[in-house]
Length: 580
Image 1 (cartoon, rainbow, N blue to C red):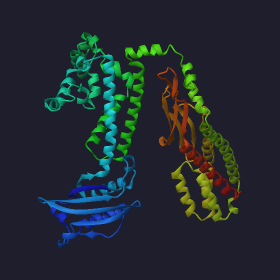
Image 2 (image 1 turned 120 degrees about the vertical axis):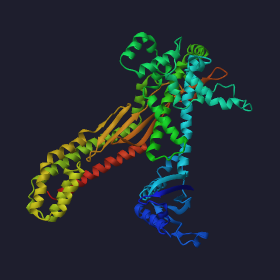
Image 3 (image 1 turned 90 degrees about the vertical axis):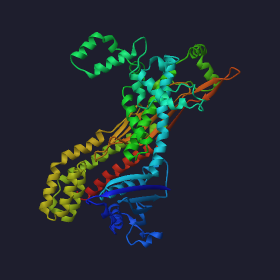
Image 4 (image 1 turned 90 degrees about the horizontal axis):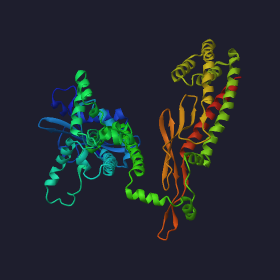
């Protein structure tokens, strides 16, 4: 059960709240809302229970239907210290996961109710929204994981590179004081003993402090406090003061912060902006603010981007941040032949390079089916366009006066859809002219104008064929592309990276993009074989080399798109041939 409570007050166009006490106000708002949102409603119940003793309508409820879903809608009016308010309560039986909720009619319904109410009232308050609470709960869990993952990566790097007491050694005093301030209450509580000896610093800083801390801190023998103050002054002043500072303290001003020296190359130059955006979004979720569909989509997108960044950074750390013990083990381990152990384990060796992986995907039945679809479509569409071109040339030479007006109008309607297919406004206007024109001369004028646009239409049809692209060999990036006769562009794009390593798993996302917007996503998962040595010194398999391709929905969508385009062109040809 979902429940939403909206409070409104301060009616528009009224100087006094007493006007809110009008007997028919609730009913008027209810009926206006039903009309605006095209709601079907059942019996309207007024002043239920003990409220029936009051003549004025101070409460009403009714079941309403919106987008084939049933809601219970309750309106009630109350006065508090001469301030009159109206409460609107929405009940909805269905519920779901967060990503389902924002696509349910409930989301659109509450937005519609809000917009209707704002036509009458100046102030609106969101009192309860269980749908939004569920969304925030779901997203906060993911965002909590992201922010602590970043703390984990900072801590892991600094322990490996700086060592013990790294926070006190290199971090600017401002953030040391801030971290201590956040934990002061906890440290004063004598009864909370269990984790007081655990280093708490990073967890005592806010999300947006983490990068700022790294940008204002320095490693080495440099006086980090002096560098911090000098850069602060240099960034605040221009002209002579700035030039003097640069001349006197050039070496100090050129010192790289920990962020610039150790992190920016690993995390990427765009990471800081993404992280700041994430911090702002995180505050929206943490405070349970109303989340709209667009914000929800942006939050999910930035979570996915940051997750991808952290996975990549973890891989870099795995290769670069190795202990002395790990290096010794790796040296000894490499003395033995991987090939021998893989043969003993009965598994295939991993690919030598990225080209082998790409070729393996190219050779699959699934990718072969996809390229065959485009190859067949390319051939079919060429001849279909040629057939249509031939019919159009024949149409140019026919005598219009020998055709009945009603038949001529039918022919012109088909021609209009072809000639102006890529220009919706022109097509609609011409179709209206054809509809209202009932004499041969007027129709001849319309026909002549179409003939003037004949070459442009043929050029547009040719572009459908000329702009077909597909790669017989799989690669990252755009692997196929086509355009329909309406000008809509469909692309298949492979995203991701190939990281060949024993026991690793690569996931490549295959996006179907229509006019720049992703409408479907498939995936290609590549597994790399690995083994381990048991207590008896025998290698046994723990992962086997394999490939899993899931692009069925994309293939079916492409099939339907090709079939629809073929059917459209075929219908144009058949419809026009009867006039030739």
